[in-house]
Amino acid sequence: MCGICGEVRFDGGSPSVSAISIMADVLAPRGPDASGVVVRGPVGLGHRRLRILDLSDRSQQPMIDADLGLSLVFNGCIYNFRELRAELEEKGYRFFSDGDTEVILKAWHAWGEDCVSRFHGMFAFVLHERDSGRLVMARDRFGIKPLYLAEAGGALRFASSLPAIVKAGGVDTSIDVEALHNYMTFHAVVPPPRTILSGVRKLPPATIRVYRRDGGFEDRRYWDPPYSRRAGDGAMTRRDWQEQLLEALRTAVKRRMIADVPVGVLLSGGVDSSLIVGLLAEAGQRGLMSFSVGFEEANGEKGDEFVYSDLIAREFGTDHHKIFVPSANLMEALPGTIAAMSEPMVSYDNVGFYLLSREVSRHIKVVQSGQGADEVFGGYHWYPPLVDSNDVVSDYGRVFRDRSHEVLRTQLADEWIAGHDASGALLRDHLLRAGADTPVDQALRLDSNVMLVDDPVKRVDNMTMAWGLEARVPFLDHELVELAARIPPEEKLRDGGKGILKDVARKVVPSAVIDRKKGYFPVPQLKYIAGPYLDMIRDTLHSQKARERGLFRDAYLDRLLDRPSEHITPLHGSELWQVGLLEMWLQAQGV
Image (cartoon, rainbow, N blue to C red):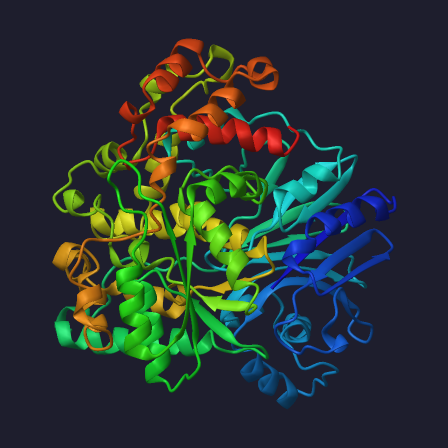
């Protein structure tokens, strides 16, 4: 896990070493162990390294293979790199390092664009071909690893975080009104290629982009699994699905143990993280470190789930660490949490992951985490109402969207209102495209391919990497997801959601963590905003910068500030936190 950045000129000019160095400095928390910058001709590459595989200097980046004429910067982990290396050695390739970075170089030379389909893992990489002048960018299937892009002074810049690009200067930082529409109505999810800033874009997941020497480029989406039943799936029994799923889960968890340093688990005590711990114990893992976080309660809402994480820790004998965060510590951590966001994210989980990651990074460098199970296996409350839907776009929007286009027009100032229902168009485009059998399949595909990428997955990456911690997500193993996409929706929606996953979990973990109300990282102080939290947001929204920006109508802000607990979105989020977080993020980035 690392941070990558660079600048490419297509006009015959030279890349700015200063800009690359500035971006690399911003990315230092992602890779605190080593750094490097290489400039050759029109291409400059920067890298910050977190040593996980091949701890020697042989795997330093930027990595250059002079014999092949290839240069590379890479962020992520290729879990099957050893198998690929053996295959490449049979083809005659010779290696000078023992990690996964060099395998990408050789794999590109051997298989070209097809190499990405062979990779099991999470990755964002940029590769330059010396002889052809082509520049290649690729991102993993779920966008677990980020890759932001911007045009600046006639050059193309890229980085693992948006703040790194902004810090280097020369970028249009005006607000993209369609992205603002997404943020306010699609639960802060801004799908690629947009970001909240007009001048910064992001490469979509499961995409490989090849730039020609003249700056023109082509994109290819290399993975798009059907959410439909194959011939013969109708004959599968519930037990058949369970057996296939359990084996796929074992493989996904085992793959993510590959490292030259210890690997731990973020243990919330829910089904997903508990199942990871159980499968690791089943595979013979000993001395496993697990970590949980909890907060003070507010409005009678409990702020921790230690009773369940403790149960799992005892059951499987993990070296368990509990982190309790007093309210005062939460306030202190909010500025760092917001600054660590590549894009504004409203989930209360952010500060939980930020503080948990700070503690975990004092012990280990790699953890497995349970993100993705709800989107892949139907764990959210908005799926069951779609079973008999005759209008999936409207029905999904009714349960997921924070507000309609019409309501948004009464809240945003006139100059910031998109000319059309941008989020409604986005939902139609994604939900109604071919390749999904039922309305539930359509919603699961949307959530797995769009919402998941720019909410839970981005949240985990940003908050863990703020402390140089690598998070791996076995529920997003692409072969596991391909299997899950075939499983009939009714098998997922059973038992209050994630039915088929719960069936499998009962074979591995105690039923007490399964037969309970769905949990999450509860941070009630940020849902029921009062006291110093209310003062902080009021000061932000009344600041000169916020007034000059003028995103929101004064009457709307007055209503939120007067009675913040009465303005809760359909997904149980605070409207005041949503608007306040956006302004705090913009100010944190100097926008």
